[in-house]
Image (cartoon, rainbow, N blue to C red):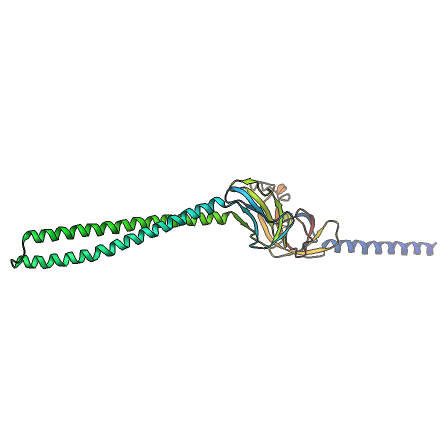
Length: 305
């Protein structure tokens, strides 16, 4: 009887010993890692840029389709620019006319100015002769009147030149606007990335500001998770995170890029002890995606490491 009891005691000891090891392993697995191995659910997103028509008109050319890779500076679409081209030809003709007018005024100024100089010089000599009795008052008056006429003529030409020069500046400003409108008929890619959506087809008419194409740089994705207030102090900007998409055992390493300063769900004024534990804050994880495996909208599991 004693031996049997001893055996039972040994078996019970082994059972408690084995159970203790398992319990310890579970506790270690739950507490291992600096972030406590908290697993968060998130969804992948990317910065989507909507390209719109800056000027209205008919789509003359659409050079890309949904799903195509694009490069920064690549021409994506062209709005019909025939009106602006015609306007620029008209403005160019007006500019030539103004230039000819300026040349004509300058030629007249070159003719009048020497005449005015000569008239002034002659008037001065005649005034000296008049003082010596060699000229009459009528001679002085006639020359003085001629000087006044030529001076008024020169002043009028200078004023006319300023008016024409002002018209030229206005026209040049109008040409700049036309050039901007011509530039606005061409839509270029602002980044290296992918065409996500196209909203119109060739020959369709669009209004200014109407969305044409959505593009995005998918070489870096963003996973947004929501962290309880009690765990928020464990996460810092720059912390590493392990990201796994559903249906795959592959992990991607990202870093914390942004932590919200406000709760997503509970008003800031409600800060009772009971509600503080339910406050949830958004945290954004930037995840490199050079191979293009990650897609917009994919659900992911995120573990802080």
